[in-house]
Length: 298
Image (cartoon, rainbow, N blue to C red; front, side, top):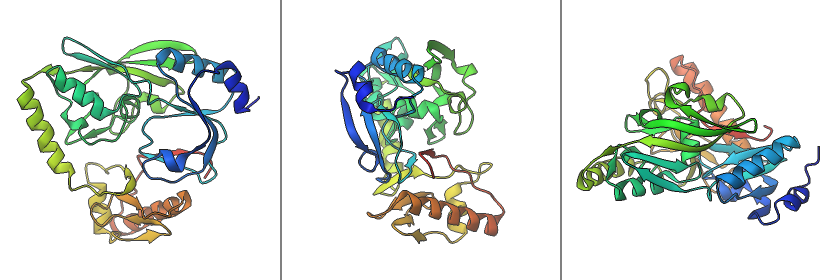
């Protein structure tokens, strides 16, 4: 197994790439080590070719979109990073909007507004790409991807397959894509024709609600809600607000946000997650489960 990134570039000489890729610079929380190489495919065809190449040669890789909801080891990742942000085409046909995996949710929402399509206002302010949002069935304001997905096109073991929504096994913060080695390529969103003013009104209402969320560098919400009980409320109830480990701290504004105070390491966040989990379990009897994705060796 040859993991030399230069050998990958010998086969993909024209693909945009970055050697010595820093996760600290490319994740919303701003921690993590480096990877030897990151590749930026410019469309689905190039993404599929890259996936086929890496799997055939058993070269380890990880796929990231906007770098949110990720915690990467301080040791980095000893493989190839596939960044999907340039795989971002969108098209609308009737009330179906199809978006590639790297399209940012805010860009998709703007595209939907241009075409008079409602039903995606909950995308407002979510710092994710379509692929990441489908992967974890992301949601906000009582809505989630499951509610609007018609079908997902994915790469799986060298094949391109289309999976209808009812077979994606969507549940709270979960989809079948978490359980296999497939890669989401695009998603069809079943939206609805609406008056643009009505759509904008919904977006502005959600924008106002989200304005209270913490600023600064974070992964977003770290823990899943437990049986309908807000994880943030449980953490606050347990006296964890303001708690810190090294440069990582529980936000005073929203207890389910762990903030990088500027000099945090991934290890700081791991320690803080375990401290918060133990405190909540001790105080409430609830064992919190993370909704973030880990990359690398911890």
